[in-house]
Image 1 (cartoon, helix red, strand yellow):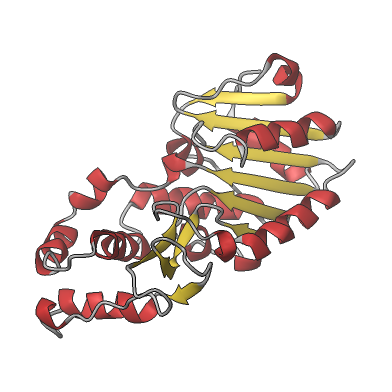
Image 2: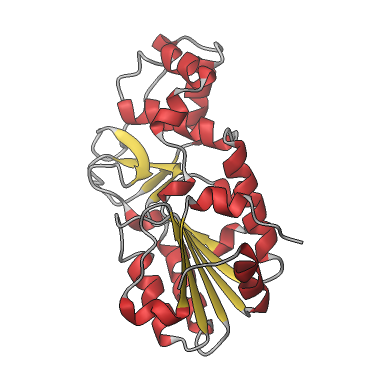
Length: 265
């Protein structure tokens, strides 16, 4: 069914006992957005001498994300957080920024299966181990802030094979999944609580890139729960399977813009 009004979504959330949220690629700034920022371009110029392209570009992306450059995205997350209120919720994001937590969502109620920018890993994942990214990230920030010269930057290497370290995201040659598995287990336990409960599922801006993580999984959860409602909002991919039409509400609109314009009392 078409989502006729914003009030319908707000009412469904308020009536629900449990809330499940899926965040997709519409909710992360593109590289084009990032590189249009003057501060990012200045930073890129200062660290352009770093050979490790993953460390260089992802550090810039992390810096850009942590300052919440997009006013509309910040507003959307604030509205989404307000919408949750005191509900029992869990949030899955296909992005590896920390925008949900910056907006107030609890870390223990979020999972990022595509990785995050808090850890580094061996590019070839030789030992399936994660390393804190803080020292490397801070060193790159010191270059950007002119505290050290780019030539003084010392790149960390894998302590096992001596190879290149990259941020722990799906962009790695061999992605180390250990960074999210504990929270994924928490998500699985959360799903057990949704059985035969009034469940509202919000799927926002999720593409078909990893359908098994959110889109197909959310459809399955909604299908088997007779008290569930699924809201799917995406600029171009808002359709649902025929067997889900009676319990789904869809909107062909950019989900960030839609949520940012919600009226939440």
